Length: 201
Image (cartoon, rainbow, N blue to C red; front, side, top):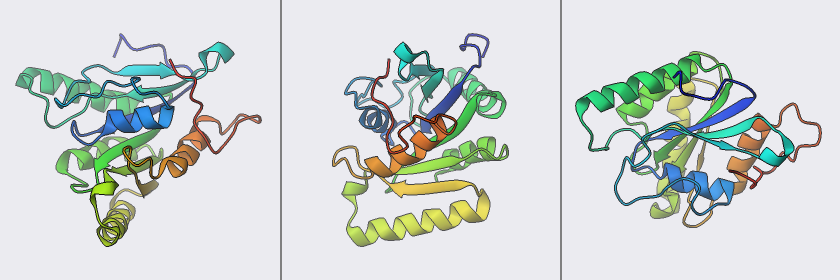
């Protein structure tokens, strides 16, 4: 934690299982093909990565890519270290404004997803769930999954929103941009609420 940038401004964190499509979703929303590294091998993100939004304007606004959890083939000691750092970041980071929790729409609310919600939601800060790879579900399956996840989120954690998302088909991008943009620019009079700026480094 001591190696993180000083807490200043607004941070929106992206978290999810290693195979849920987190990096693809982040790249799609930021309009960058190679912002977050996408790999066929799960668990390639092994650090907390900070991406500055519109740095030329001096804005202290960041998208934060957290290490994926669940499938990375690393020693148990490394898993324990990641777990400790992630829990502290989610519960203690004062500039963390919201969490985008990425779940594979075919396998939502796995035990580690629930753990992430438990770590974060007690603070009262908002969570937006992206049910990724929704293009792999039929329309009826997608609607059923969305309603089921929404119901469970409301019953157990509150202050959560959820949507279907597909990086491949670019589905749900505008809906996600509105939510994240509102978090990032709530205090900016000149902000565009309908998009996340694509000037990211």
